[in-house]
Amino acid sequence: MPYQLFLTLISGIFISGVAGYLGTLMLSKKMSVVAGPLAHLAFPGVALALIFGFSLSLGVAPFVIMGAILIWLLEEKTKLPMENLAAIIFAAGVGSALLFLPIGKAEEALVGSIEKITYRETILVVVFSLFVFYVVKQLYQKMMLINVHEDLAVVEGINVRLYNLLYLLSIAIVVALGVYLVGGLITAALVAIPAASARNMSNDLRSYKIWALVLGIVSAVAGIFLARFFQLPTGPLVIVSSVVLFLISIIFRKQSF
Amino acid sequence: MSVLLEVKNLNVNLDGEKILENLSFQVKQGEILTILGPNGAGKSVLLRTLLGLLPYEGTINWRQKSRIGYLPQGLTQLKLKDFPLTVQDFFALKNPVPKTEEAVKYLSLVGLEKSILRKNAGSLSGGQFQRMLVAWVLVSRPEVIFFDEPTTGVDIGGGETIYSLLRNIWERGKLTIFLVTHDLSIVYEHSTNVLCLNRKGHHCFGAPKEMLNAKTLKNVFGKEIKLYEHSQH
Image 1 (tube, helix red, strand yellow):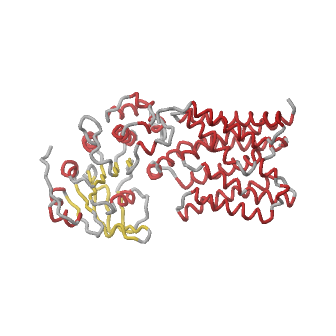
Image 2: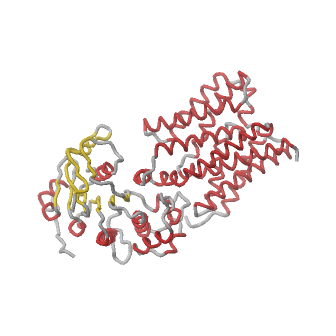
């Protein structure tokens, strides 16, 4: 197997897998869309990276993480729904980026550049993916109870503020990774689609999580190979594969709910 | 029995509106306090304030730290439909996670079979879900339970209501129960004390027999209410 393809596959599998897993929490909190605006926050970072010529990830991550913290602070202050706040953040990101983004050179930011990922970047992707996976695994049950009923979670002794922050930061890291894989425009699909397909196919929490993880990985692998075969961009094909899997999942939809 | 909770001059304002004004009462260990009043009188707000979920002025003094169980208003099977959670998954959201034997024990106490553990929580019937929720709360062996207005009169099977189920559980252990309702008929049967609230800031507090006369009720609900006293069961 060519070395570059190997790196691409490894990073694609890790990013898409952890995004699918995290997506199961986001779907049940009805905030799958939040990843979208956060990903758009990548654009100002991309613009800076392009203008000053440093690595994309260096530009993207700080903006996305700042966006997550901003959403968290605004939610505490205003009590507005997170998706509403995310829409405001989205406008801020795209609006400010369009002012000075060299659009002609921004293709990488739009559709990702996973097929050109370097050895060092792959290591970073793997480390961050594993880290986020571990964090999400630790907060999963508590976050799920917060999603079911926040007051109940408080009475059960859960520090909702802390968990919301950790949760948003996990989303931010996954989004920053997702920009590598599929670009800033469609990152939300990485978290939204596998979880939706898994939801169709499961009645219990365990199979829901496993299916989301597996479908995330399968769509990344399928997208990467299809892109090589048809000489098309990788990011969009990962998403298209994911959508096809979603359509198939409808056939297997469990009837009990 | 010793005093468990003492509330003095409690004031709660939400979004600039006075919801609760100068409320004072106390609850002893092992009592059932029913909080009564029309819609919008602040019953749920009081409960949530006592649970520490809302900001307040005045004194809320818990004399000892107790394990608290809470059945919130409006948590029904419909709300769980969005989640791929079996009943077992739902129990596993507790911390610490109860052992399966424990869950089964409390499920059977509320009249549910072990096999319900594998069912999707969102697909239960209303009555099954309420029972399951009671078991979910009880499995942590709480000393104090807050119960916010279950669907009034839901027949949860065998002609038993959620209230008589609670009453049975209360009789088994040294539970203190806070019960919010606007259903007068259950008050005589089930409570030690009644706290009534209304939108105009009229409160009353005392034993059901002293409180539930036509005059107090008119003050609380703002209209004449016919009352049929149940004989003691």
